[in-house]
Image 1 (cartoon, rainbow, N blue to C red):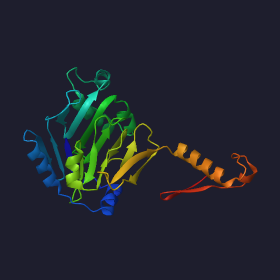
Image 2: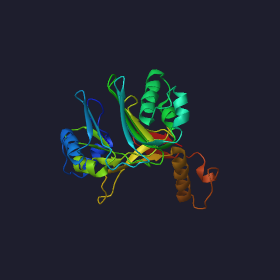
Image 3: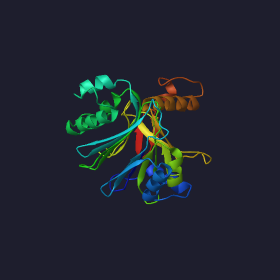
Length: 272
């Protein structure tokens, strides 16, 4: 499956822009990317949504246990790949018929999220059990919502095309040829929403997500990781104390009295 969105819908992530700048590599435009997908998949279905969004998918080579599906309702478009283990209970929760499948469920779940604000998006995605990746585009509000399961059993990748569009696909090689090093694996257990303006972990929404440069020999330009700040700071403080105290000791050691440990994280200065 493939979703391509112009900068009028989503701003290219700074981390992917930086990755492409570190190692310049060939790219192609969004239209060329979609055309390449259609040429490689003659039975594929594609949609142009307004001037700023394109979706395409095919059933070719899909897993019978993780099929791809598409649906649209009330100007909400959804591509879904995978299967939900708790589909039955979720259909009851959202008042859907027994015949409803995963992609129909995701449209209804998104509508509930949109219309019941401030219902937290991490709650909506966190209730999904199974293997999945999905792309939801709400044409009426120009909102994009993308997510993967907690173990990334259904792969999803994102990158930036030559003309600055953000592309999502389940085929890394397809995006590699279009996005060069402005490419990364979409992090597991996370969602991206233009309504909330950033990438977030739905399992631990308060944890920071950071990107680190990938090794030169890797296909990616960057890797996104969820950082547990509490665990990180505890270990950081331990290392500082261990290195500065000649005779060991913990936070109550005399050497640590009246000591402030400073740690610079991005633009924020933390005092511990």
